[in-house]
Image (cartoon, rainbow, N blue to C red):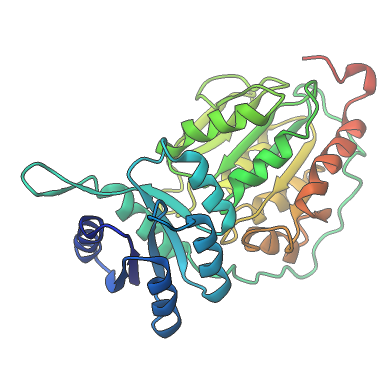
Length: 351
């Protein structure tokens, strides 16, 4: 995997060069100290991955991400000195097409390279998942009945959302347009590193009328709360309506796995619900969404035009996992429409 580096600081370029050179399967393609040089190099020598320092002097990093994505299939990985301090800019970059973000490795007082694990993990993940979604078509797909044709006792209806590249901004769009008394829990699995989740939750809290919190192992799932997966392990919901995390499958590159969350809900959640699969690279979530649909859930995927990366939604559409394929701005209304058929108006405010 050929990796390019864009950083205006000589020390920053040197640190990233040392980090890339130390990683198996990675080689340095080229380095650039400014956006114009990077765009010229991109045309003559396109790499597989670009490590981009978002806070380049005199450059709008968000616009640079957009230009790169318009002219190249290279994967953009944002590097920054502090994800938490630059969270808003980083989320804008992810919405513009960057695949992921990571804290920059640094030098110790003795000149040793430290804090390289985050970058190494991101590049390993890209090596496995940074490909177009496979086309998987199911033949003789069984017919699906009316999603609202049966009701189960026990658990209330639930809204499950999965997302990847471009997901933070898409989630904000959905959460700011949901009612405060939704009448159902919202459970979110997003491909994002654990060290980035707390900042994401704070941002979601600033736009959501529903309380947003981390999905903690052993805690019950309650209506009118947004729960966000926060571990590299996979979030599941058990038959008692409680969260738990599992390391299995260990060799699954998408973490936390949307498929695992959706599958656990299709198996263990006795109430019907709404499954939503948003923008993202790869095909995680597609098979799980199909299981939800077969279990009688109402399933929605984001359309190509409004997706930052039309990978996961496309994979779901190809196997007929989605009942509706909608533009991002239309998904909140579709959720509320499905919700009214799941929850009688007189019960919508009950916890």
